Image (cartoon, rainbow, N blue to C red; front, side):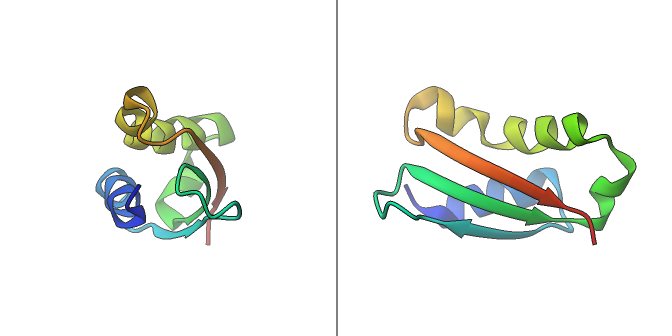
Length: 75
């Protein structure tokens, strides 16, 4: 899967996000993501996770993306 599509989907949900995608297995479907956004500081950990998960939900549901490990940081 094109990582830029994932990055754009997350940035659409969290405009100030700095998004880094890692592909440790080099298979394009088991990815890791680090999202850094000051705007997420006002939310609980669970709410932050939900915001990012909702942004990429369509890719997981369609099978285009099998797994995405997410780490969320606030600045």
